[in-house]
Image (cartoon, rainbow, N blue to C red; front, side, top):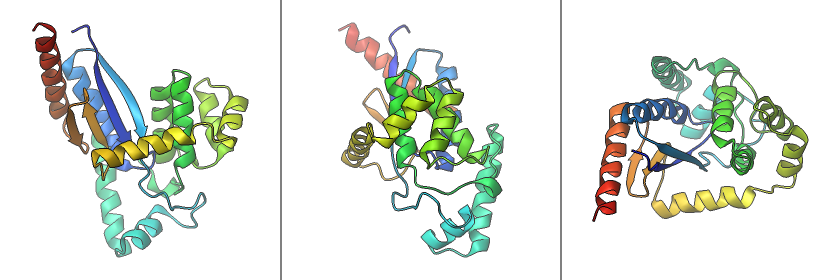
Length: 219
């Protein structure tokens, strides 16, 4: 099982199912017990969100989806419970609803410096668990520095929007694939898996991709 299976994952930093799906995918990859190469791609669930939304996630979702506050609170309670089941402690009372485009630019910056996976984990934890702001350059630079990236260079790159074209390319690719929701996993460029599926589903897809890759090699 030496040859890695490439997995491309479209997700958003403020998507609760993306963090849950990340944990379930990681568990599935562990069950697969082979080499997996992961690359994250940008997807903006709500590109029209202001950087500093004046209100709570409950207010935001109620306004955006046109749902009663009580129903939104039940939705968040449910997703918080599911997050707990995979070891994630969501704190919606502290979440800063924001625009995520610059956080996606940071993920591309981190990828260029070989740290994309670490940055993705840090951003998700910052948003859902730590109550940090992930929509402002200074706050993002602080988070980047926490994983060892150069804070001043991050500010330079994000201020100049060096990686905005890469974000747009990811969004365009998602549209080309017909991806309408995230997380969305593309296994070895062949199999699409939508949503935070069970670890077994991911493990099975990885095994299938590995078997087919081996068969093609031996032809």
